[in-house]
Image (cartoon, rainbow, N blue to C red; front, side, top):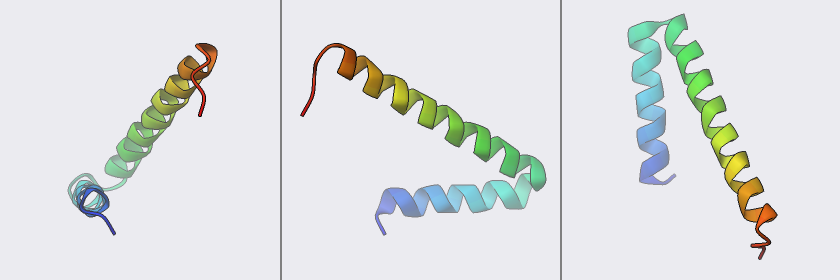
Length: 52
């Protein structure tokens, strides 16, 4: 497990502990926003013809 993964899991567990169910909802929204940003980045590179 990388240090980045450890920090993400730690942050998630602290948020759940502090905010309860609201923390889980917030984390899900943040994760969804990250996925949307990643997909839009992939589409942007694909539309410019930048492939592997």
